[in-house]
Length: 217
Image (cartoon, rainbow, N blue to C red):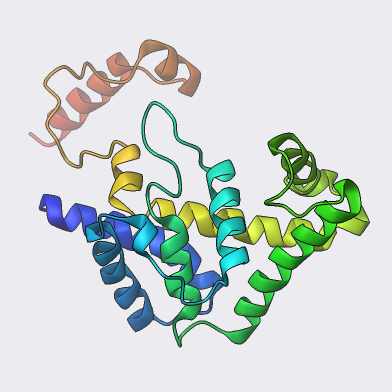
């Protein structure tokens, strides 16, 4: 498999979860994977004009995406990888179900409403600490209070969408450090602690192999 093919395979694997959530068909997934390349070729993120999100939603999406995947020592953030742009593209496409659009828009509205009820300001206008207080309450499914389940369902889908979009990008699959079928001259077999845990050994394997060879002579 060539480097290009490995890249394309990882890219499509990244697109698939988001496409599934949005009820996309296989041809739609192919179009989306090509769109990733066009987004990566766009030098200025600021020049992107959202097709689905309105101006307020766009600010919320970008802020929330970077909370989910912040910049670290290995790679840039979700917005650096243009995950919000890709999500916007997919939501605006004709293959996306209307129900998926309603869920996204309704979830963003729920987040603003919850922030205002607690702190008197929307998600964008609130402090980072205030945002994280709300997100912590909806981020862990089994611990979510009944009255917050709608918000938790939205956040679960949004988080998965950001991750899918991020790992569909060049930055995302490079962050995985996938190198493909590269020869490793320094590999010395399975570590002893692992073979002991499995209850096997190379000595047993060698003995079994030698017995098999003798039986075939």
